[in-house]
Image (tube, rainbow, N blue to C red):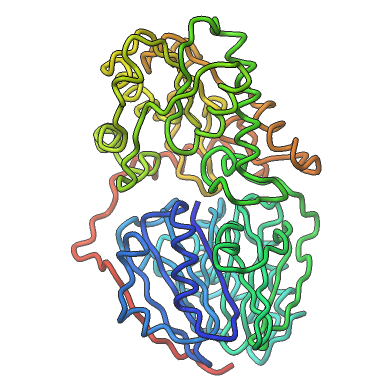
Length: 506
């Protein structure tokens, strides 16, 4: 769920990249990084923490250049604390390449081994993004023989990446002396779009994970990058694109529409906000079938991402809508916080109940999803402590029963509350008087209603279907063991890293 952005402009891009990362901060709060191309030299600064904490004025001054890439990150592979694990990543040969990646490679360990044994490339971290960078570098080396590049050769290299790499990946990369490359995996799992800005000095281009980053920076949204497609913009602002996969198909991650993306983004032709409203409509049908409507005094959202669904549900059922919880926006998302104890404590810090809205009432709480159940249990208890007589709970997403391996930091099966429990057992676990889930087909239908061409989705955490075809029970067991293993301790982790890099000439 990282956020990436790449820009080719006519003026310095450091501030532009910084501001775009601020608009994508919801996609990753663990680390941030910016790399710019200044002639044949790369400049980079990255570190752990929020964008506002990683970059200072002196860091921004050290990032000259009219083109660059940037990323906000939370980890699905690699360390959460080391600046060396933050992106972008850099490799010196061929040409010099910087890369930032959103997604997760399911065969990264195999590729890492191949890099060492066959391609003779050294991988320095446990990040699948560094593996992806080296695969791209190797393919560029093959098509150019280390001499020179043109768009056709670059697209041929991306085709080679598609043949070798499995999983999800949306990528922005800078090739020293050439330009900005962006591409999306053949299944189109993770989002990527681009836009343009016409200036007196020429056309500027931006590629980003979400359209909100383009529009917030004044760029006109053009379209989404197609599954398997690569686009290349050279430093003279010339634009090229080509389909680089044999059998691409669009299977966007449906959890983007439920929770991950900003509501003001447009993804694969669908307004995220509109999809969430429609989720509320379909969820209303489930509530009507399972809870006596006369027994519900008020509908309340768990802020913020469930608000559109809760409003639309209340409107369709002709129920009162109220804001019963106030959110402290300076507390991180519990969804990506490590450790049950930390998440449990954080819920009370993040949300505060307005007692007068609960006292003596039967309330229907609407949340975007239930993952571990820890947050839901605490919220139900908060409502009871505030004086609610009955607490009903509705989730605008279906039960999360399976791990996600395509770039969302879903927990292990043993931590997923719905992995081994039916709805009644989950209701008892979270302490609600009734529990209502969205149906999987209604979830897909809510998004498809706004773009009928979306016939398939990546919805593995709900339906257990892993669309890349390479995820086996043995694979899930292996990543679960790796996740549960104690993390290695770094005696002196570096919180920030700045580099000025002059790539070798081809």
